[in-house]
Amino acid sequence: MAGHCFDAVRQEQLAEAKAKFKQDGWAVVPNIIDDTKAKEVVDRLWKAKEESERRGDPTYLDWLDPNSSNVLIFYLMELDSIFRELIAHPVAVEMVQSALGQTFLISNYTANIALPRSKSMGLYSDLSLQCPDPCLSTWRLNVVWCLHDMYRSH
Image 1 (cartoon, helix red, strand yellow):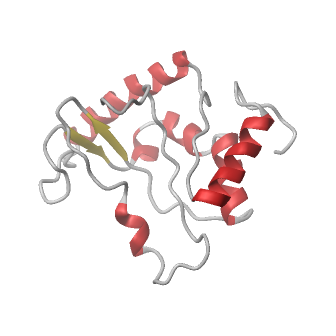
Image 2: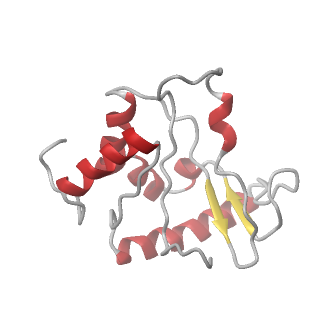
């Protein structure tokens, strides 16, 4: 995949993000999808929420979520093909492969919609369940898709 230009992401941005992840354990790659695609994903995410609830899957877990303004949607890849597109997006895959190697496993793919008045929660603590401590190298990571601009005030 190296050498290709993915959407609006330049190879220089990708190289910087890989170096940042290697150094600090996290990185942000902006503008992977354009505004039109982000809106489409958001629209389909809300439809996935409706379908999830129709199936009887909870979208709020009182033992996990700080309040009902945090909306969870499980089984995204099953609910809509657009989430399979995102999980296989070349930029996401290249970032994962740069950290974990060419082969990797996907443990889950869940949405967390933080509505107004939602409270802070830990970022997917499921990672701690996958490998025993001490973690001396990179065995796991999260790819987080922010579909709206993120600011401290949010």
